[in-house]
Structure formats: structure tokens, C-alpha cells
Image (cartoon, rainbow, N blue to C red; front, side):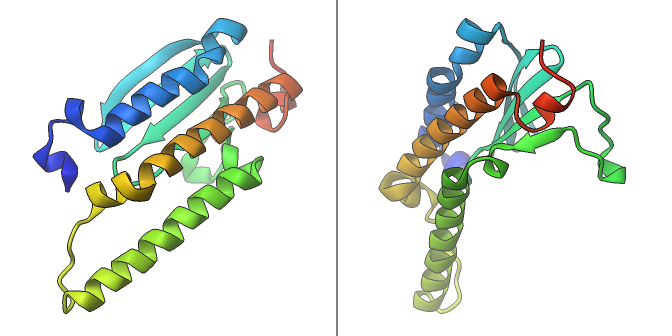
Length: 167
């Protein structure tokens, strides 16, 4: 895996993610008064959370995949064990975000099947090549679409944000 061979600070996927999150989600700070409340690794995932009580915008990224962007209203109940969620994924509001994720999963699945067939079942890791060929563009496109969807949800108070209101 690319991350094992390259320090994270020099990893293209990680640096692309950090740069584009700052670029695309900067409006949260400048226009809506959010602040970064979390910017850290938790296990293999990198979390960036923008907060403006009671709303959190969580952007979770693990190298090798696309980010997960969730809008969370902390005034609502949340209990994972009881399947009570106070968050909405951007994919619930954006067909384009769903398409980007689905396209990536389908393409990666086809690649994995092709690699296994051509190598006699030996699984080769081609994440860095895939990221250079297609993944970087998908990553950037997804973050742009996610940011646009977050903006619309905040402006129009859609989903869990609007249920209890936003200051």
C-alpha cells in the first residue's frame, strides 16, 4: 500500500484531500462562522470536522477510498447501538455524489477482478497507480460536489439540520 512506503505527509491522496477540503469547505468558516473542531487521525481514518453549535460537518477519509461527508445536528438524539442517527450523508441529497462513489466502487471492483485473473489469484496493490490515473480526479470531484451539497443543506435547512433548525 502506498501509505506504508511513503510518509503520510508526502502521500498524494492525503495532500490532495487536505488541500481540497480547505479550498472547497472554506466557506463554512468565512460565510457561516464554523471552526475546525477536529483535524486528526483516528485509527486509519483522517477526520476533519467543522463545527458551529449545534451543527457538525464531518469529513472522514481513508486512503484508498473516497471521503464520507456527514452533516450532523447535535441537538438531535444519536445512538449507534439503537440505530438513531442525527446525521445525513451528502449522498442522501446529491445524485452526483452517489454516482461518483458508485462509479469508483464499480471501477475498483472490475480492476480487482482483472488483476486477480491476470496474476493467477495473487492480489497486487495498485492503489497509487489507480489514484494517479483516475482516483485523484474522482476525489476532487467528490469533494466539490459534497461542499456544494453541504452549502445547499445549510442554506435551505434540509435534512436533520432543518428538523430542529439552525441558528
